[in-house]
Image 1 (cartoon, helix red, strand yellow):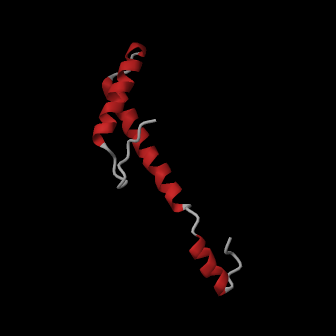
Image 2 (cartoon, rainbow, N blue to C red; image 1 turned 45 degrees about the horizontal axis):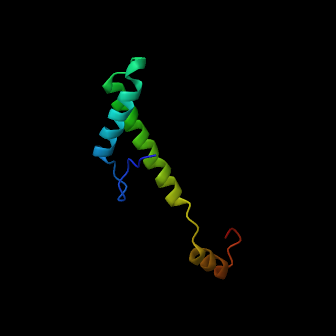
Amino acid sequence: MTSLVTPAGRLDRRAVMTEAHRQFRLMRRYGWSFGRCLSFAWAKAREQRARLHAASLTVYCPRQKATLLARGDEQAG
């Protein structure tokens, strides 16, 4: 799967357009317009960015857990 998100977390317009054109070549025979494929590619990019953002929020951090344990926090993990 091609990444539609830059390493900085922004949407890569070039990759989105390339994905839309690839999708159009596949779906043209089923009656999809280029606009529909472009809309689908943007939605796919936004969803990919949301998944990457959610994954970055759930990263395990042993230093933070050690700090919480030192404080006596019961919910440290």
